[in-house]
Length: 153
Image (cartoon, rainbow, N blue to C red; front, side, top):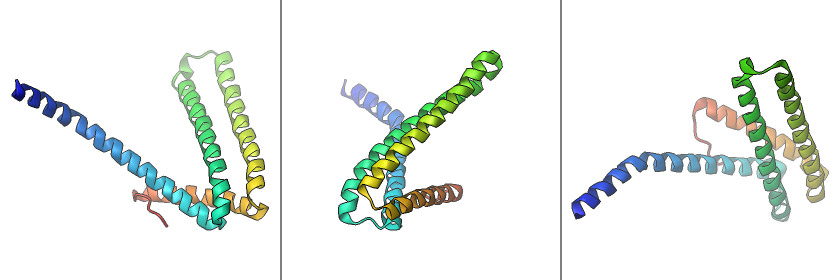
């Protein structure tokens, strides 16, 4: 009986191990990307410790909301594109107008957080933040093209 249990346990471990490793690699890669983002933004904006304490919670809310909107938009675009040949003209028009609505929601969210950032940072640092965010995106794309895992700067 113990051999059977050990065999089942080894089989389960053998089957699940690749998924666990892949999950750990994904989590590590995400952690590396987040660390790169924090490093670039902190350095380029010149955040002091006190500014960082009030900025990062606002930024984390901003980033989470932005990611939710991007995911929602992507899902709807993919669905519409996959079914485009089966949709009526009216349904296609609705999908396009819905995309405009989602873009507007993203813009409205950006504006809301711009106002929040102005409350926690001096205006020059708000401007530097937007430049740092763009620099982070460029750096991440460059590293992804080169297939190098992001590391802290």
